[in-house]
Length: 180
Image (cartoon, rainbow, N blue to C red; front, side):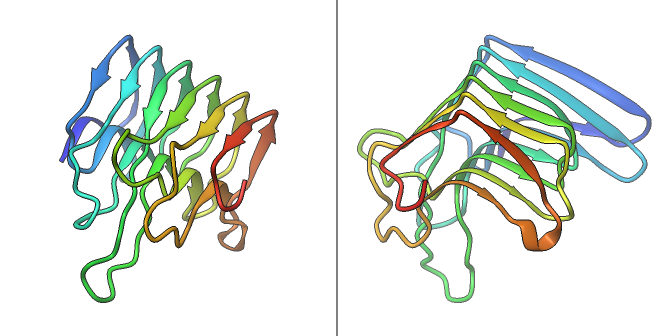
């Protein structure tokens, strides 16, 4: 379900991805993950994530997902997606960029958008899960073409502080969100 996934299972691993386009993926376009004792750093630049395969009623989808990983997301075009819960008790939200338990990630100078003719992105950038820290989000255009239907989330950037997550936000611009 992921177009490109890089796993750091043992030791420190670094991958650099430049000028790469992924689309029609199921769950994530680009996904670095740190697993167990391993650590993964992904530096993603000049690339395009999306649009994903249209699965808005089945799963939450993310253009870029950092899971326990570090790195940079710079000068990319990233499509988010909308998610409409159709199965009982399966809440979720789609994002353009998901930083899940991530650390030391800089997200800068990207254009985030939603696919034409499809529901709008639920969350532009989400920072959550297990005290994400060392996150800098700067100079991004966090846009969507229109709201999701229903637009039950609609947040440009969400930093979930109750779990200890932290981020520094600098000069981002927003368009068509319920909450910027």
